[in-house]
Image (tube, rainbow, N blue to C red; front, top):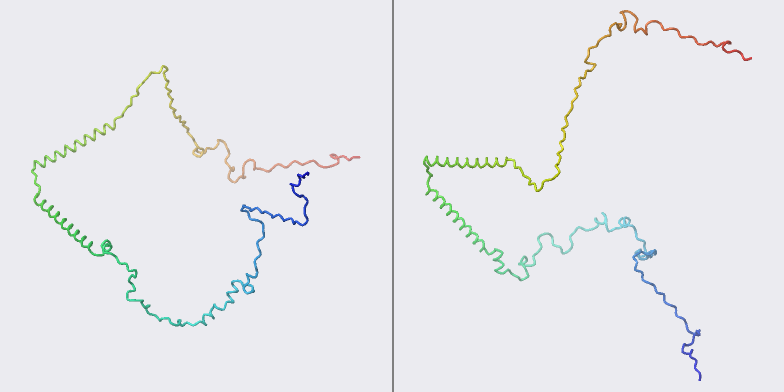
Length: 271
């Protein structure tokens, strides 16, 4: 009996009774921080209005509020509430109101460290008194030593010897200071050691000093010279009572030359 090896692959013919399932769409989650161009959700108008009434603006709502204002304050009573105490200090809760109710008390060690027991004050007083006694004893000892020494006495020879010693000391100090000044004032010349002599002699250039050349000028200004008239020149204006002006202005001007006459000789007829 022969077998069909293709039966192992199954039936490829689609059955009408089987319903094909719709593939589920896979949406990839975006990791970008950019905003999407999506319109914002519209606001719910029912939530915005209270009891289905539109809300009023703040100024208009303040005007319509009847619980505030001068009239509302006048209507209120100024009496104190019932049960309130009029004036006076509040009643204390007990006789030990200001004391601590924790039950903890300071030990003797803490009080001693804080200096509230008075022992530290007594010790300080004793130390101060002992210091004052020491000071008085030192002062008395110094005064007794000065009295025992008595006034200092010197003979004339001892006094003169002291003056001579002082003069010698001052002279030695001045001499030492002068020697130091002399040493400081001396010019120290540094000698250069020559390790090897050069074969070529170095020529020293001597720069000629520039001499300043001055130019003497004797300037004479025209204002300083005396005014001299030309010899034989006529006096300005002529004689007294004569014509004004010079030669050019004297006499009459010559008559102007007449121009060409326009007649038939100059312009013959064309004809």
